[in-house]
Amino acid sequence: MTLLPLNLRQYHWLLIAIVLILPLHIAVADDQKVVFFENDPVPGGIAIVPLDLPDTANAPSVKLGTREVAVVADHGHWHAIVGIALATEPGQHSLTMSTGEKTSTIEFQVKAFKYEEQRIVIKDKRKVNPAPLDMERINKENKRIREVKAYRYKTLLPDTFQLPLEGILTSPFGLRRFFNDQPRRPHGGIDIAADTGTPIYAPATGLVVDTGNYFFNGNTVFLEHGLGLQTFYAHMDKIHVKPGDKVNAGDLIGEIGATGRVTGPHLHWSVGLNGTWVNPWLVIDE
Ligand SMILES: [Zn+2]
Image (cartoon, rainbow, N blue to C red; front, side, top):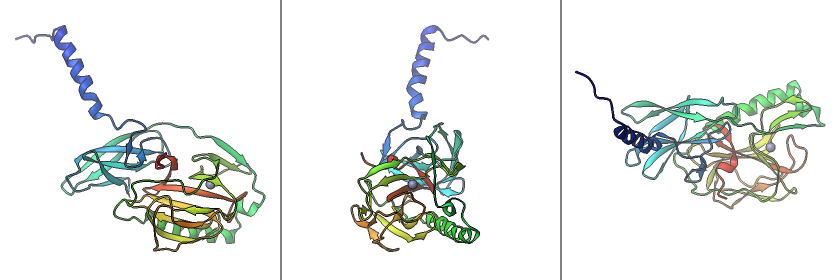
């Protein structure tokens, strides 16, 4: 018996069928939104990964490594909202999804992106190369920050997100920084400059997880907005909230200041997802 080769006409139909099926297997388009999250799968960005699970089913547990990732329903099915650390290598990465009945692996792609570089001079040498006594304090603070970043409220509280104040953007997210020619971690937030005392407002509904005075960050507030979506406010002059408070969008949380490691009064504002800092513009409604 011989197999009949597909004639040209049949082949055309096969091609059309493949083209029609293909988009179903591609992740959501770049700049597509789910709730207020924008898809931008680069280091420091957010990957919106559609899950093959209708929203009539219970929300699955999705992990990136050991970290729980936010899962939200949109257009009838569940999506993983993955915060991608700035240090992530571009290429294929995977999530683990557990529904209770089964565990599966879901792949997603991280694209390359090169952030700008900046070199600045800090006069207070102790803030660049801290003394051993300072290191003790810094290590204690880092432990506390890790605990705060691991805190997670069970549901996503806001459905919209605004900037915490109007000001001049002086330093963008992801900037690769050198202090006195020494490489430092890339900028995990945006800097908004304004006069000392300028009010800072909650950008969305949230819970105050922690406040305190930190060596580098000065007077600091951490908010949790649910599912591990957090915002972080540093270098404040005054803090007007306390741990345990619930805030609504537009509530006064503090004032612009110049506390901690700074060159002038500004707010350092970070947005966290699954314990990593992501580009704040990917959650802001513009
Ligand atoms: Zn900053």
